[in-house]
Length: 145
Image (cartoon, rainbow, N blue to C red; front, top):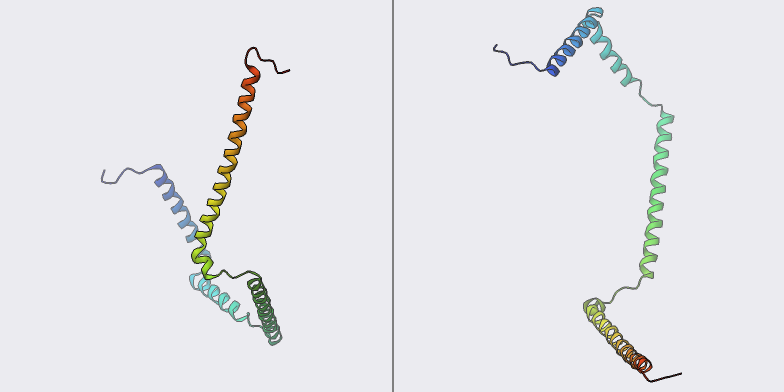
């Protein structure tokens, strides 16, 4: 009664853990511990030693890396030249223009507004003329044939 109630997942996990530990024990019984540990570390040491490169391969690798660096440097030079050309093409903003640019934008907008108001006035007068012409035509007794 002192033990907490065991959940089904906990029981399954315990069973799985027991099976895994039993498998490990069987494996260790088949191979002696010193033999398994010795062969494992020896294999790893062997692999490290066999990765030495031949002098010819080292030279080729160095030459390949050197060529790649030279290629990248030439690309950098090309990109810098392109950037300089683009900078020369683009007009540099004047200090006056950037400082007072808002003023020119405001005056441009004001001019656009004035033109729109003038067009609006003209359209209203045309509409008024058409309305009076229409009223004249629709009055009873007047015939504009």
